[in-house]
Image (tube, helix red, strand yellow):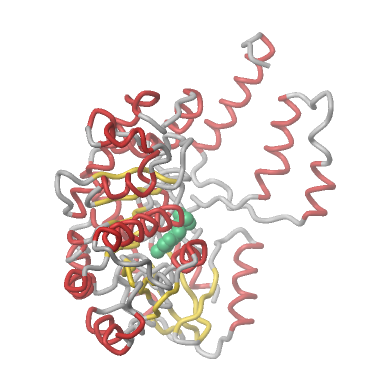
Length: 454
Ligand SMILES: *Cc1c(COP(=O)(O)O)cnc(C)c1O
């Protein structure tokens, strides 16, 4: 099993050949889910005492399993937040897999961590963070949000201790109902209350609403330690009033976390940068390169204004505290809730190094431009109504007379015919259609073809 034999060589050709063929597909097949019964019938039992052999396992994957997975990189996959990894990033993911690097500590992964940190630095600079800031790649926005909020609470706890104050009866964070589900989930994991701040008519958190809520709830704020703002909501692609929120957070000494898992990539686009004014004052930011920055799963960047605060919260061995204060000993394991870590930022780094940041700026702009064209297309069609002017790359719209069932039937037809994958969402209490674009290969013609079937 651990020696490269002539038999391994044959499997190697087949596996690498399969991977290359998949990477070269343009477009890849959209594919779609199968039922458990269908998979059982077609794939059968694959784990046996003697093994079925690499050739057969690859055949089962290629013929049965892969077609039962949706291609998130298909140019007409617009459900949830899809993906569009560059060729370079996907190819380099093969290298990462081949290299057995553990990205936890500098002593293990120095070279890889050096490269990852350069990619992180590009993101820190886009956010306008200072030279002393730093970050780490984690598995996703969920892991990033949780780790950032744990850091925020740890800072609040230490400040209270230093001031000789007791722990609060309950810790609390402020967020809106439109904050991503992972923020609410993080609060649950941390057993922290959420102070829900009402949003404006575009479902945005504003500084004013935050301040009003904090004044109304003045008696419940003893354990309030953080505010979560969203830099591009998943549902509607709308950016909160970061500048207004940051003033409130600053005045009240609250940690400001900006969840830019989906939309933070738009920092790279000059046409959208102004939406994010104020993000430079955040304490932490999450941006998922596996969403709108063209990296393969799974890759999220967790950015800290002051990484030392994160190290105090997350370091698993206090004896290393001295080392983390030195840049030579940047240990990624210290900045989030994890220890073993794939160097998942390397595919993103390789592609960024290969193509340069200007190509990323242009690719993100292309997606934003496509979204504006899609909005115009919808506006121009009889029977369709555009619901919001898009800010990043989500369009929300409705079809006259359609309700939830009709949208779902239409979406099923699109998937069954391998035309597209999209799903409705809820907006102001109503079922509407939602397209989320992340793929620079998607064209307005793709959008027209799909709208024509409505
Ligand atoms: C996708 C998303 C998340 C969760 O990120 P994962 O990478 O799926 O864990 C968090 N926040 C926002 C705004 C998102 O769009």
